Image: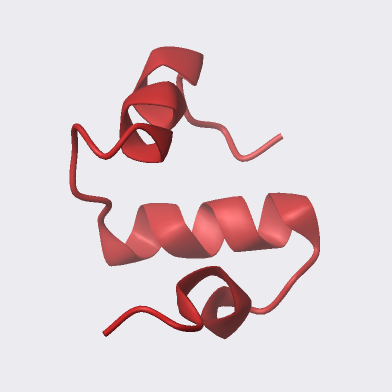
Length: 43
């Protein structure tokens, strides 16, 4: 739904890759949440 390859998303989830801002927004839109919800609590 985000238009990203599943292996890319998996590697982001496992912390193997850093996510770009545009990809973060794409994932947030696919999940129907604001982008800040995906980074809440990260310091």
